Length: 141
Image (cartoon, rainbow, N blue to C red):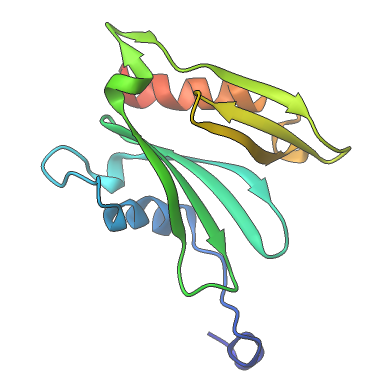
């Protein structure tokens, strides 16, 4: 950490690989079934101080908040595979809503609603499509 970030109490954002490794901090992480190196991560929200990531393994879906004012990223929630898929069909409802010119809101299932996403990150493909693809790639292939 450089001098200015140290004085300000900030750090750099974690890299995508570091975000994937951070799932090890989850109380639900299963070392016998999950390998962070094999996980996929999707950045859904970004400001100068915060990033929100969705990480998928073959067993769980995680939501991780990386706030540079905090010591390390925080796992907001994780969801077991059987709440995401049933008989290789996606169960999880993923819906978006308008919020501002630069951000939208995404609901991921019934328990995780109104998560901010940055529209600029999804200019070519919608956030809900990207999340579905992330899940399918990890949990169905």
